[in-house]
Image 1: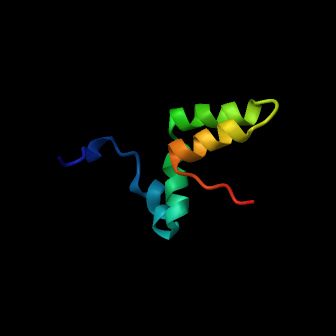
Image 2: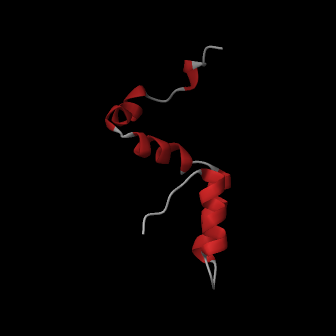
Length: 67
């Protein structure tokens, strides 16, 4: 299926994507995902031990947390 380009606002808005690393590219799309955003908010606003939520996010979204 060919995407409908008639709804694109401006291809210049996406020129910066050519210089992104693979992890930068993944972040660009992950941060726009409402389900990821909800999981992140759960971790960010959690009180107490964050390990269970951090582990859930790591498993669900395939993320690694350094340190």
